Length: 231
Length: 231
Image (cartoon, rainbow over all chains, first blue to last red; front, side):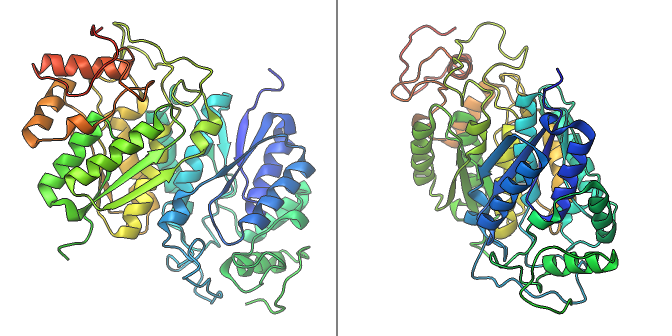
C-alpha cells in the first residue's frame, strides 16, 4: 500500500524532533509519515503545539495525533511541569548531572502512545529525535534506554515487530543543525525554550544548547531571543 | 521514615489488582502503600473508578492518584475502548490468541505513570496484579514483559532502582481467589466485567475467567451476575 503509514514520528516542535521528522519525510514522502505530539502541562505547551501544527503543514504531514497527558503534571517533580520549581539558567555544567528540568520517566509516556498508535496504524517504525551527547543529562535520552524499550515492545505487543529508531542520538547538536540545513528542515518554525512562549529566553538549558549548536555550525538561528549573550 | 510510601500498587478495581493491593497492605500497613487508578475511556470506567475508591477506603489506603488517559481511547483498536467493536462472549478458546479486547500496549501507559509517581514519591517498588496463566492471552501480561520493563526502568530513571513486582503472575485464577480469601480481600467491592456497569454480564471473557475461578476454588463470588450459567 503506497499510502499506508510506515513511520510514526514523535514531534515536540523543537529542533531535534523537527530534523527527525524532516528526515522521515525526505526518505518516505509525507503521506507515509504520521506525527505524534503530546502536551503534558509543560510551561510552553501552547507554543509547542503551535510549532507542531506549523511544522506538519510545512512538511506536508497530514496524519497527526495530539494527545493531552495529564499524569505528568499531576505528578510534578520537574521544573517543566511544576511552576513552584524555577527553570534554571544554564551554566557550564550542562549534562553533568540530572537537572531539575528532568520530567520523571517522561519519554516512556510518549513512547507508549507512539507504540499503541503504531500498532493500530500498522506502522513498523517509530522515530524519535533523542540526543545523548550535548544533552541535558536525562537518563531517558541514552542509547541503552531505547535498546531496552525495543525489547519491551518485542515482549509486549501483538506481533512484536515495531522498532524505535533514534537517528540523531550519536550526533553533536552542531551536526544536527548542519543535517537540518542540508534537509531544509524548517528551523524557523521550531520552539526549544523551556520557559517563555513569546520570544525564546536565550538562557535556559535548552536555549543555550541550541544557540551553542548554531554558533558552532557557523549558522544563523532564525528564531528571536530575548537575551543576547550566549552562555 | 515510618510513613513514607514504600510501594505503589496499580489498582483497576478487578479481583487480581485487589488481591495485590491487599497483599501490599497486609505486608506494609496501609500508610506505606499508594494506589494508582487509570481511567482510559474503557466501557466500564465509571464503575471501575467507584470500585477503586471503595477498595481504598476498605483497605485504608489514603495516598491515591487517579489519572485520565486520553490516548488509548483516541487511538482505539480495542473492543474495550471502541464502542464500534463488540465485547465478545467468552468461548472455550480463552487465552489461545490475542483477543479483540486487547488494548494495544496498554500496560506500558499504566506502568509509565506508576514509575513517574514512584520516582517522585521515593517509592522503590511497584506492584501490579498481572496474571499470565488463566488469562486472556494479552502479550503485556507475561513475565518476560515485566522483566523487560524492569530493565527499562534501570536504564531510564534517575537512580534506576525502582522494581516492578508481579506477585500473582504465576498463579492460577483459582489460587488468586483462595489467596484473596485468606487475606480477607474485599471481593464484594471489586468489578471485573468488561461490558456492563449495573450488574456483571457473566458472559464476557473477564466474567467467565472470574466465575470459573470462584467455582474451582469452591467459593461463592459475592457479586451479582445478570446471566446465570458459567461458560
